[in-house]
Image (cartoon, rainbow, N blue to C red; front, side, top):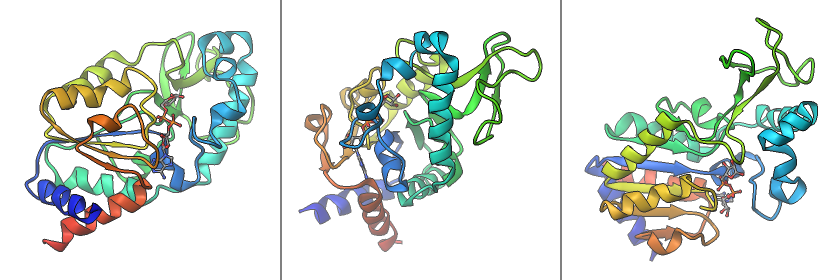
Length: 248
Ligand code: APR
């Protein structure tokens, strides 16, 4: 039954449609990076309001940075998995391909994806609270917590979107535009719990796109999917990519 769906999706991809992909923490799970809401998820061990909000950072920047430094340490020791690598290859092969991610782990970029709409920022970037300048920072662990801006001495924060903060407007608009024109949308490894990211596939479905969901669990988006694979992203993407190449 799923082989038929795999062949159908590979057949669609062969026509080089406009493809949009929305990923969540689940695509990095097979790289050994904890998700947020799964059974071993980060929000089961920590309270988001204590660590991922502007108020938490205002209250205790060192505590927030200790948590992000710990997460950076985990990610630094992990590699992109087959799912990340296949999406990077599809970007090269499909002219209208757009990758939209909620993930801040930077694994899509390390896998070779180039044009990435990072809705929630990037854990490997820091932003100066005084100058608002954003810079890459790969120190892991940080020599000093909380880190300070080398230029002005201002406090640095992780360049990620916290609960209660607006997403980067231009990036969100680009993601919405991509979903309005996409013909095929993959929704991979997201619980579809956090807005506005979770609404993007609905924008695409309303505009007539076919929706493919890849997630071991059911989500609020499952009912909108033309094809649902309740299995791991790495496995399903390998099957679809293999079927795509079989025809080459
Ligand atoms: N392959 C595909 N999906 C998987 C896999 C896997 N191997 N393992 C787990 N999943 C699924 C889980 O079933 C779950 O539905 O990935 C999803 C991860 O959901 P969340 O942990 O809620 O992560 P995400 O949807 O990315 O969260 C969105 O919430 O906390 C904020 O800013 C944070 O970007 C994050 C946002």
